[in-house]
Length: 245
Image 1 (spheres, helix red, strand yellow):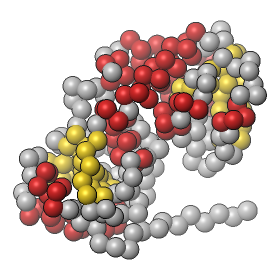
Image 2 (spheres, helix red, strand yellow; image 1 turned 45 degrees about the vertical axis):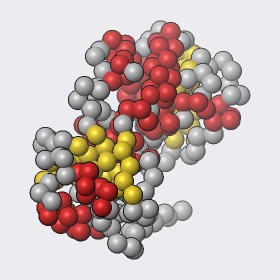
Image 3 (cartoon, helix red, strand yellow; image 1 turned 30 degrees about the horizontal axis):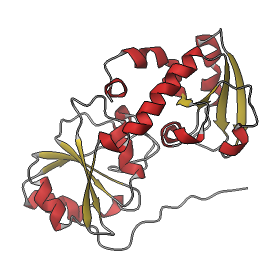
């Protein structure tokens, strides 16, 4: 079956509300991003920033189609490909899913950048920070500890284009020869069905990285993302945001 994916741009006006304009003035330079629905209409926002003397930088992140687009499923800072220094993030869009990727991507709480979300639909400003994900990160840290001590590991693999990582997941067997890996392949992750495999000690997620974070409570035996599984011991010992919550 052929599938055609089309963007669905927002048809209304996209601009900074007065609350955002007043708040963002305290920064010299912001990193500007938006979800795909709003990214094509940032001209007015850029004009407003110039008028109040605030510089902005942006980039074309990994796996995005246009500059300034932010993917909520990509929670690694390096994926932004942003080399320039800035004082805060300015995100244009509704909902928390996309800008939370910016929170997850922070390396530590000493260099944490403030995240300003301007919602064009509500015409309101919201501030986001580490407090949004503290509970999730505590659970994730526990899942990393459990993974290292577990023997029977369930690896969740999706067949969705752009998310399928079966071959990279096979490298787990070389990295952890003392563990036994079982691969569960499907189109969608069915959390309820995972409980049928009670011989699994813990899970590895190879699908959207946000499953490993946002859906922690749906995995009774814990879950870690594929990239983090390879570096679990290093993550738990290094000076990272995860170890300072």
